[in-house]
Length: 593
Image: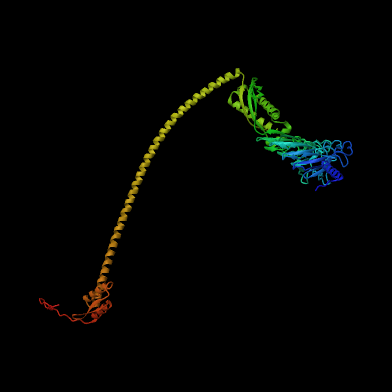
């Protein structure tokens, strides 16, 4: 089945489709990336007034707002979009902004002051950036980070940090600010109640333009190139053997009659710098390095070589022309360096004003008191040197110069007087030499004779000593023998006495034993019973049973105790008395056993 769409419906649908396509064509959309943003330009509206660069509502031109991440829709026929990149400031950079719109700068100002709150806090716009009422380079900068900076509102300049190297001092001259008071050329910095300088990113702050009184020590600093002139100079380094004499160019004037300036006063400071490194403002302080080591001033007749003063010459007392080469070792008094520097100047000036003229003057005055031959003989020359250097030490000490040592290297005396004296001196020296040789030879002979006598005496002493030792030893041996003899006699007597005592002991012991045996025999009624008792007593340790006689021919058993009882009983029982038999008779023997 088919049907036919009416023409008016088709035309209406076509018109709607064309309208939709037109709307889609008119509408634009965009989505900025992570590190980009868009700005819009109005293509319709009123023209901008002279001096205005950003368009407000219903004005034609670049608008003020920026559009970051997200989706944005706009009318392609009335607005256009421009993409911009985010500005990235590195960790060793600062970003200087130049504002392209605003009022002209006030007279005498070169930077546009940013808008601040009453407490001094910077006011920032929607982009997070400082703004100023005036057109020009802002007096504030941006530190490291990422920023969406309107390309029509600001011009961007990235500059590196300012570096103060080791052994250097950074000097800042502020180019913008209030003019300095009359007569001043150093800009004072702001300080807290303790007197410490107020810093911003390590930079001292001041309201005035000019050379800042505070300096930057070694390090990296965010120095605004439009606000400050930055330069580095070497720090003051005082080496060993030197001191630094400081001259202050600012401060109050020193009172009349005061030679050296104190802290806060203008002039040569009474305190000097000892060895070390000092970070001083070269516009405020001048430092002269003065050596406190010893120096050598020479007066030579030699026109070549190292720099030196001319030889010292003068007429002698007897009218001869004398020349002397002199070397003087000197140094300045370390406790009076500032005073000496103020009065005389640096080392070369001190030598030229104090050492050289006084050496020359004193040598001439003292030398003219001696005859020419006195400078040839050692005694006269030594006296001249001694008096000359003593006077030089005394005179220079009053000026703060210490004379350590002096030496007359050479004295030139005219030939017509020096040759005869020299020849005579040589002859005299030769005579003295011969005399010395003779004295040495005589001394050697005397020494040999003395050594011979010493050796003889030594041998004699050794012989006498040996004799005395032998006699002493013989006497000692005789004494020992006598002691030994007496000891032997005593020992013999002791032996005889001891032998007699021992014999007596044995006799009395045996006598006691015999008497004891006789008593025992008597007690037991005879020797046979005692023998049996002793036998039984000896068997007691190993015998527990014995046979005892009961009657003749009869035995019975018993213990040792029984044996002892039997013996005791027998001791007390009367025994048959055996009659003596005549001699020659024989006892009848029992028959059988």
